[in-house]
Length: 147
Image (tube, rainbow, N blue to C red; front, side, top):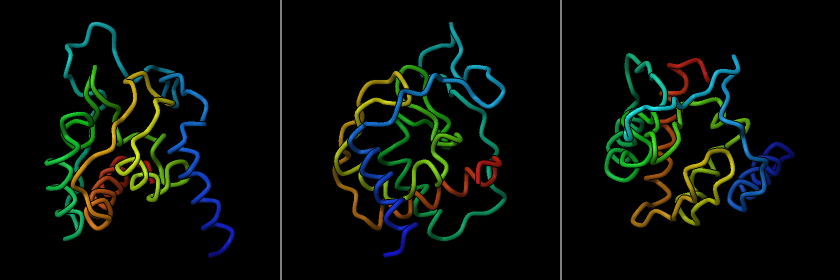
């Protein structure tokens, strides 16, 4: 494994351990992602959908809808009062590599970027399932200018 691989692995372990500083909820323009008074369960960001998805991303969309949508919302837009949007620069590969998603599903995550509480481990996902989910999330991120 090269330097970049070790760096990505270190970031993933730090994510799983919850040692990153708490993010303040601001986006690049300084405006806040969540809105006061938004109805509980409202999407936190608007998501542009990709024109097409690869076969693996289609499988990932199905797995996401089965295991992740309740907290992370339709098209990973987040859910007010429940979970953060994954279509957000905080989850770009340079900050949260693909391995971070695997570790999060296996071990859970202590709250560190958002104020939604800790994420529990997610039962019933294989490494292949998570790879497909990540392919779906990365396709959404790309369509929204994050990658």
